Amino acid sequence: MVKKNARLFAMPDKIFIQGLETKCLIGVFDWERKIRQKVVIDLEFPANVRKAAVRDALEDAIDYKRIAKCALAFVSKSRFRLIETLAEKLALMLLKGFPALKQIRIRISKPGAIRGSKNVGVEIRRRRK
Image (cartoon, rainbow, N blue to C red; front, side, top):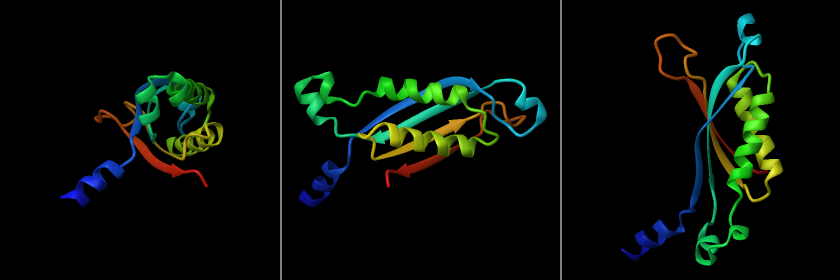
């Protein structure tokens, strides 16, 4: 039983940001290159939150508001054809721009992209090299 509990507590804490919405030029069809479409972004990354929690101090926490703002700014200005490319480039930008991020999971969806579906998207996981 001790080993099982030890593994449980060895798991990293996570910070997640769900449902960031913005519009950008995304798509391969001519009409998609002319209008900004809604995309939804979810971010998740491991983070040791213990120090911030114990001290209850913002300076010990990862600034996830800043991460969200950078993600939104990047995506809203982007002009990629594929959401796969958008996800990849966003991951690279965030890993490069935020040294505290060692890895990240990004999910980008494009609601309404496929008639009859509620949503379609991609999810990637990337690590700092």
